[in-house]
Length: 338
Image (cartoon, rainbow, N blue to C red; front, side, top):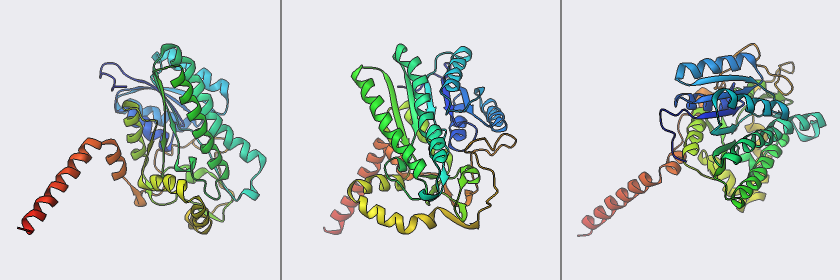
């Protein structure tokens, strides 16, 4: 799919739009003048996100939605098309998690994380397919994770959900190919990201949770998503840590088990004790009265760029750079040996 002409705004739906990665993706599409359906639960976050959209040049439609409710997702999709017209791009980014040893998890924890982080993607994808397939046009982008391939300790519900999204997406893609459909579905696999989720995730650990370094800013993810909206890829890895985690797990999964068993507990916690009475967003939004924005509390440790993403999305320029370096080395070697 080529970039839409400037005079034809893209119609985009983004779940999890009020904060974190979803918020950054909204901002990126707003800069392109997109008309955006904002799906999330928190009213304050949604209202602030809508202001972002209008300020940056797009148009926003607030749609308070719990993506774990299939009927709410379907109604939101219908409302977007009623107001803005046919949906061009649907991005599933809503998520929730629980930081906890598996033995301390409850069945309700697993059910809720699965309903939001996996079934929320399923319901969003179904709503998009119902509209895109008859038109034979559209893009669905799933916000995934390196954890869709490599599970880590203390996040078994989230890792299970991301693995499920990966399998679900592959099945859908195969069916679209079988039907010779021009609807495309992609997955963007994320590294650790500096988002507010670590302020409100349900936590049973002794210390406050943190993303496993290296950490990236959510705008790095947003840039990757807008790229894949314009240049189809079945999936795009973000960050060298994602590449290493996924590829290493193919060849040395046992080593990954051992390494994460040794390091995975400490690397996911700060040195600051957790507040056992802190609110979490598992069952209700925490941004109902306060806007948390796109960033978390790790700005001083987060990377604004990813050389790996640049190289992956600029192969021709990378080839020219490498060819130039090779030429310089060759000329230097010849001169030195005359």
